[in-house]
Length: 335
Image (cartoon, rainbow, N blue to C red; front, side):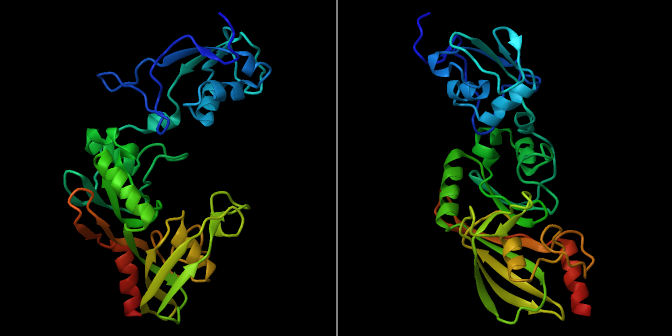
C-alpha cells in the first residue's frame, strides 16, 4: 500500500455518535458485538504518541472515549494489546480498535420510572422534576437519571438529542423542565434558551433578611480552582451571569425570593446568593449554615414560559412546590 502520509482505514464501518457514544442493540435489548476498526499509521503519525495519533486518525471520536478504550484493553498495536497512551507509533503500524461501550455509552439506556408530567402534546412535554433526581448521566450517576426515564417512557426519545432535554436543573433543585419530543422542537427550544426567550422563574428561601425589595446580581461565574466540584464568582475563565430577584416574604432570619435568570450558568442562583451573603437554605455545597432542619435545598423552578415550536403560542406552566419546601415555610409562618 502506498503511503499518503495519513492514517488509512481498512474498514469502512458506521461511526458511533459523537454526542452520546451510542451503540446498536440487538432485538433482545443487549449490546451488539462491538465494531472493529483497523488503522494503518501514515507518515503524519510517525513518532507520535498513540493517543494523539488515534485522535488525528478518528476525529469523530472524543479523545476521552479513545483513552477509555485504551484503559479497557480494546486497542492493539501490530496485534499486541496496548494500554499506555504515551507509546509511540511508526509509519506502517497497524492499530486495531475494538469499539466497546464505555460506562457513558451504556448510560443511554431506557429505565422505567415515575415522571410527573405537567403538560404534554405531540411536540414537547413539561415535567416537574423532584429534588434528588439527576437530569443527565454523568460520572457518578450513569443510571437512574431523568434521561433514562424519558427513554423508558417513550422509545422515540432515543432519536432526539439528549432524549429531548433542552436545559437542566441541579440534582437537588425541583421544578419545571421542558423536554422536546422531536428534532424540530429541540432545535427551536434550544434557540429560545440561547436567545433568552425561554423564561424560567425560581422560588428560593435564603438565609438572612434582604432589605431591598428587588435586585439584580451581575457577577461572572467560573469553576472554583480550589474545588473543581464547585462554581464561584471569579474573573478567571468565567462566563457572564445575571440573576434578577424580588422579595416575596421576609421572616425573622430568612427571606423568600423569586428569581429570574437571564443566563443559565451551572449552580447560578446558588452561587450568586452565596456571593451576596444570602445562601440558599439547605444547600449542601454553598451554605454552611444549619439553622433549619430541611431535607434538601429550598430552591424550586416554579414556572417556565416559552413559545410553542409548532403553534407559536406563548405557553406558561407551573410546578407545585415540594411538600418538604412547603413544610419549611409553614414552620416559619408559625414562628
